[in-house]
Image 1 (cartoon, rainbow, N blue to C red):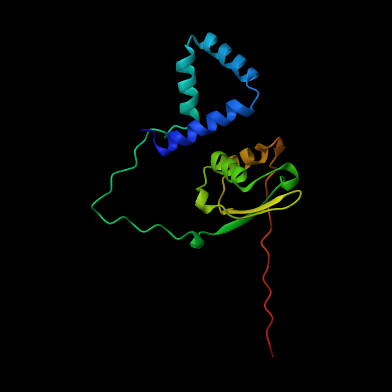
Image 2 (tube, rainbow, N blue to C red):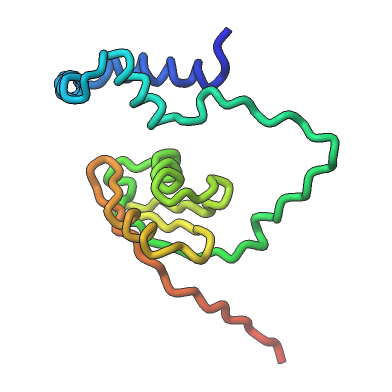
Length: 163
């Protein structure tokens, strides 16, 4: 019986086989197999491992000790960023989250307030992003459009006082 992860992978593979032009990928795979002296199955397994290294990891057994409560997400300081990809580039929330998680390693639950606009997207991420991760995100792409991430200045909140 297949796990949920395996079923999801199977569906993604079926979709790719139906909708994608794979000739260039097949040619590259053959070239890699030849150069590395691998059979096709070993090469495909290695590529799958690179894409989903935790596919066969079992969830940890439940401990008898009460786990430590996770830090609430709203206590983590957030910073607003502008991504130069928007609805005009057919960007979707799921794609943006996927790229941010894969490139920066940030937990998906810590990505908040994704506001996709016509030409750009505003997103909130945890404060303290290392510069090398920032550079990776600047060059990352969604549908051929570079993210060109930029940190936005904090908005000041003005309060009106009644006299």
